[in-house]
Image 1 (cartoon, rainbow over the protein chains, first blue to last red):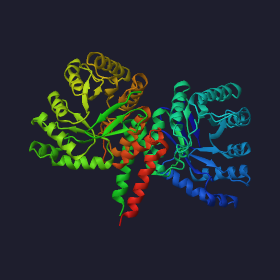
Image 2: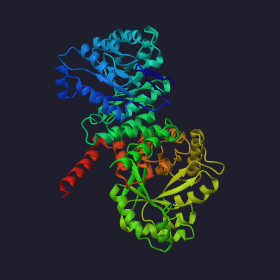
Image 3: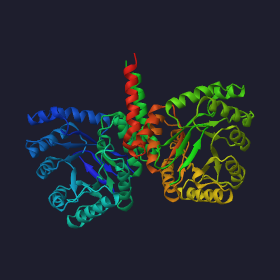
Amino acid sequence: MHTTVLRSATREVTLGHDRRFCVIGERINPTGRRLFQEQLRAGDLSAIERDVAAQVAGGADVLDVNMGVPLTDEPDLLGRAIRLVQSCTDLPICIDSSVVEALEAGLAAYEGRALVNSVTAEDERMELILPLVKKYDAAVIALPNDADEIPMESTKRLRLVDKIVEVATSEYGIAIADIVIDPLAMPIGADPTVVCSFLETVEGIRTKHGLNTTCGASNVSFGMPERHQLGAAFLTMAMGAGLTSAIMDARTPAIVEAVRAADVLLGNDEWGMAWIGAHRARQAAAAAAP
Amino acid sequence: MHTTVLRSATREVTLGHDRRFCVIGERINPTGRRLFQEQLRAGDLSAIERDVAAQVAGGADVLDVNMGVPLTDEPDLLGRAIRLVQSCTDLPICIDSSVVEALEAGLAAYEGRALVNSVTAEDERMELILPLVKKYDAAVIALPNDADEIPMESTKRLRLVDKIVEVATSEYGIAIADIVIDPLAMPIGADPTVVCSFLETVEGIRTKHGLNTTCGASNVSFGMPERHQLGAAFLTMAMGAGLTSAIMDARTPAIVEAVRAADVLLGNDEWGMAWIGAHRARQAAAAAAP
């Protein structure tokens, strides 16, 4: 079983199958946030400081940073955002963009060992992104879709995982441990079979490659009521199948605590020491409250 | 994949791998309930009516009934309790005792098709209990332990499952679909590996036999703080691995809702119709509240 090491200037976080689950905070992302988009277009990055603080308080281990705002200079914006986040917290960063130049600007600005989000199994994307991952000694999230399709069957996704692993390691010299697979979490409201396929894919990746895995967990509950409960149930199930991290809502205690409960159950929080410590801290805080 | 049919006089409940999870309410059980024990010893069964109502309101699909009070006539008490429960609800019953005479009295008193809790892989227990299961056309919960040990390794548990299935079907003529395996859920606080073993066993039973499974879910969080969250995480993980029912806390919304969320995600509540309906009912109730 592989471990993936991420670092900020001063802190190291390790993803692994017998480690505590890695909570990657999803919030620093303008998608669906109209006000934040307007602020970013106007060069106002102050909301980021609040988003960092809320996610650190919520228990994030890593922060995803995405600056995908149409009609902006995304490379410049992402570089500035990463410097700002690093001035607020020592958590490692997941640099998130579909624009190759923005990924490079982010990597150049970043102090530490980043997680790049993301590459696909498309030859063209691998050619553009994997050399950057190698140059900056980063780890990379890889999605099992290619130019033809986003396959729905786990067997097809697993074949694309094989391809990515083969190409990244043998053609680009990337260590297999630095490949984190995102098996594609999709909305259950659109298709009742997507979570079963997802779980099969996660389990297949664990069994065959021993790689770390991640996903955009909030996608699953898109369009459904009571999203927090669906998110908590999804993450705990996925952890049972072998998921080792997620880009997720780190600000909602019900979701983060579900992940920490699953850590106890899977033996990743041995004897529940962290769980019991968090419980005692909450009790102490409640007792100290007026 | 097998389905197990349980019935009361008027209602049928089916356990299965593509069905909604079967919530078996655990509450009608004097273990650890001193006051209830005293009431039962004095012949006062009135608490049962409240326990039935609370579990029906909480969303139980089946009710477990256990009358294991030391120094009582357990067969008589269990027979009376079952008649009382059947006068309060039409949910099917899981008849729970380690005393063979009590199981027989319960089966004789019961109207419908019961679930017998439980038999083990011990030859002596199978000889005593399986003929009763056959005689009363019941289904039976079987635990993979024998006279030698409660094995901790999933491979050993799976061998005992093989033995039970072989003996129950070929020697006692019980339909394989009527065997529900309880892979033994143990406290995570006592050993950090028990849940991983449990999940492997559940998955092995699904893959090899396609049988339904159950467990005493509350055992897992025994001795730990924040038991509801651990219980919710355990059940959703176990459902991901193939668990199809549990004897569990049916009175705590956070736990039952976690199970229903997992049903949505696994496609057992197709398009989330029940989930969305429950959400709307809660909204309507909140709007109607003064």
